[in-house]
Length: 198
Image 1 (tube, helix red, strand yellow):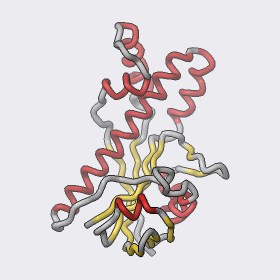
Image 2 (cartoon, rainbow, N blue to C red):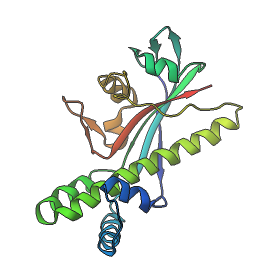
Image 3 (cartoon, rainbow, N blue to C red):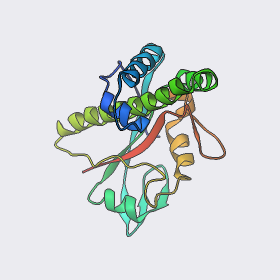
Image 4 (cartoon, rainbow, N blue to C red):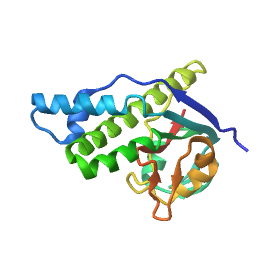
């Protein structure tokens, strides 16, 4: 049984440019800036930055990847993990409160709902980036390097791998992250990914 480790992060610096990009805005008006300010204020104390992760041994034969928690055929993942002997499997989430706000404002103020969606997308990416930086530093101290993260559903890596990921990490128990029969995660602003160690 591989040990699942939990991490909770403090609020991370905001990249407004990324929020604007996720909103699909070409120009940033005073109104857009005010909307972003309001949305950030609304979710300031509502987000939780939680991650659970575990390390697994890896072996690859042609396009078959034995990830330690399951086997999968994927040319793209095999290429990404080439030269690696182990992986970090992680799940990250911002919590359910943001989903509730997006739904609530979707009925009363759609523009706020759209902006909250963009904030959520930027926040979960910021969380994943911070976690990856932390892992990079940790493994660098051991003389190792990391590959870029790779998620189920990217390239030819089947989304069905999510079932194995959730079972391996116990996402529901550890960070309140669940997966429905359609393989949709809840909370929606969540990510699971594999990082190769070499």
